[in-house]
Length: 401
Image 1 (tube, rainbow, N blue to C red):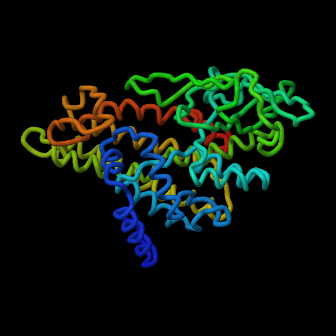
Image 2 (image 1 turned 135 degrees about the vertical axis):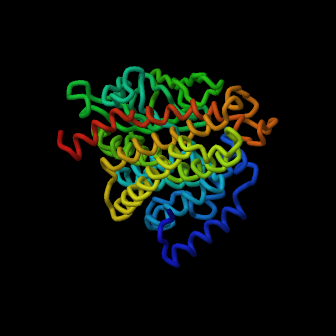
Image 3 (image 1 turned 90 degrees about the vertical axis):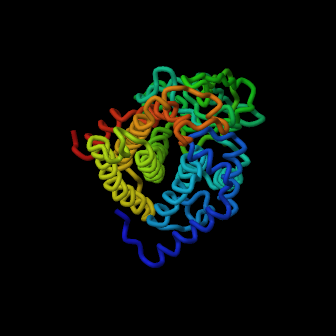
């Protein structure tokens, strides 16, 4: 079922499609569609293309470099990008830190950091999770002690962050740090920006099941951070952290990527045979496809409501938790069905398949990465606050429990 777009919205969709056809590099689109890993250069290239078009930070206000789109335009753009094989923009600067700085940062911070996010001059990563402080984020133990210095006050940061996605590429990290141990956990946290090249910062890769090192540990040993890098007020960081997480969780839902993945699943199910007929004619398999499509249609509507609320000056609240739960469950189910459709062809793990063309069993490039992507997407319901935590948020904010 398609949404009923107006003539202006259909014209915008045509504009987006023309842009993608002309500007989205074919090699990057092919990698994205096949579920292969993108290099840092791939991601930087797509970032620069979108920024050159003025469409990179499509949820930022126009005064800070956003295109001034409404909810439906954002929905159309995200959907068409995903269907065309446009990769997910690295979210930490554009989709997470940017909104926090726009709402809570000083004018000096906005003037300095926002243009650098857009230009790609800074590659940001997120310093939230710690050993023992994942979903229980308020338990962070990394400390920042303010030190008076005639040359300029600074914070001395000590501690450890973990699961730092793409930290190996980053030159900057935004962190939650404890600046007061004498108050309740949420009241003693601050939000600061740290240059990864500062003496005392050490990054160690974490090797995952698929042989990749996308996530990392980051250690801070007597790291000096200028007080100018404190965002907002000291000890108010929990407020900023929650605001950021609503944007992260809405993005994790990945509505556009769900739509693209479902389209891929349907193509595969039509090509693969079971008992002499296409898999999509198998009653049980077809029923599972139908169920996930129904859930996706419902999520589209919720996603539009959330985008519209934010565009009107609101803040995504429990709705972002709802999207995170449903979106991650849908994406996991789709990739589970893709893996099932591939049957024995999905069993081998072919590391080379993550980086370039390999021999394609049954004429389907997805077969080489089906199992890897299935296992990788198990993380979706954990990071950004586990789905169990999201249910707690919903029960408290909506049901009052």
